[in-house]
Image (cartoon, rainbow, N blue to C red; front, side, top):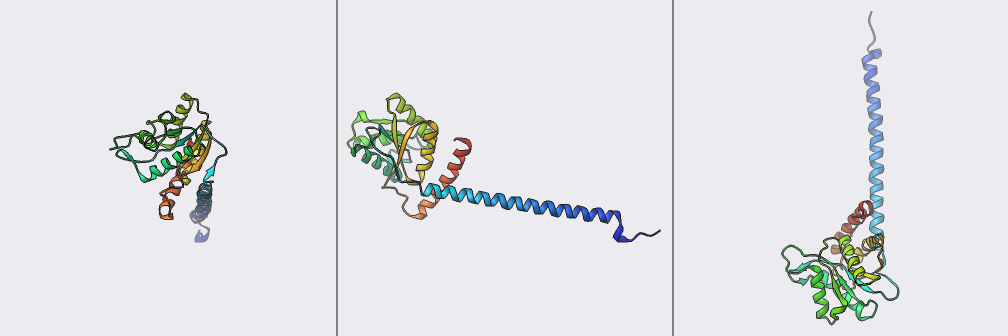
Length: 218
């Protein structure tokens, strides 16, 4: 007895398999497209939030300014770091803060830590030694603020303005809030990040580290 090829059990199973495979492939493609779209939305919204965060976000006076560390050129501040230092000193001279805390550890090949470099810079710019504090253990923004919080507790300082570059402020405030620091923020007007050629890579970096902190608190 002969069977038509169209009714062969093998071919029927083969067609069923390919239909299932096609459906699974389409579902997987849809899921991947949705995931990619969601990721783009998250990255874009995070970037917009960082870029539109207020440059000045404080009211009244504070016990101290926490000047977040940046690179040191052997024993002197780099232009990026100096821009932050100048603004912290400005806040002090304007009587907005009563003390200054400088943060940051020792980089490879440097003779002084970021924190100590900041302290020396402030002393050379007319700030009294008893108004200057620094730490030199930290390597990251969360560590900067953890160590600064220890300095605050030791010296009975309860409120702070965090000083850094504009795109760094939102994440810094987020970390400070998580640590329980009563803080405002202020962007240095002397920032070296002036054109989008320099600002855009900085923004991308902050998007990455902000999402990382939200997920892992580090």
